[in-house]
Image 1 (cartoon, rainbow, N blue to C red):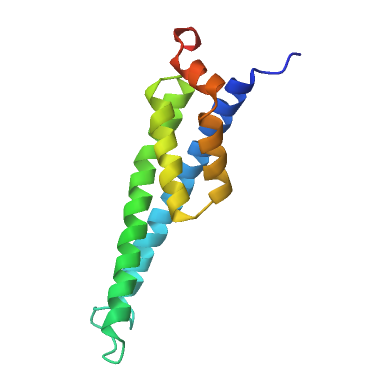
Image 2 (cartoon, helix red, strand yellow; image 1 turned 30 degrees about the horizontal axis):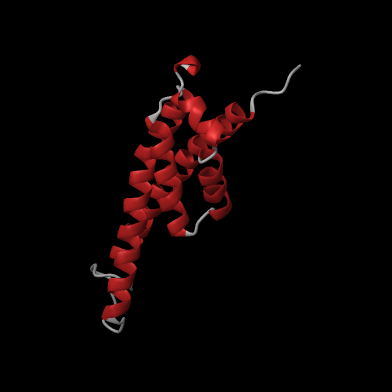
Length: 137
């Protein structure tokens, strides 16, 4: 059996990674929600059980982290399935959208090898041609 075209392989891998990351973003969103509840009701938050001895800067830092993680998880929860759909149906916009996602993922530093692979594989000329051509739809 002949091996699939390299461009098709890279597109399929990116689709699989986007689906897997959608699941990870869902888990991250759940974790951020739990962290927010624990932060509010814990002794390091602003809730009714907060200890007065906790430094205000630490509280602000914790809150900023929770908001940043929650925001990225929700954005990714919407963005990754959209990218997977676009790549899977070979839409030309999917290359730019998924590359932007991979670039922002690089900025987080989380799963950096996957982000680098995504950027390099989607930047290949044969992958761009496969996504731009009408034959693949």
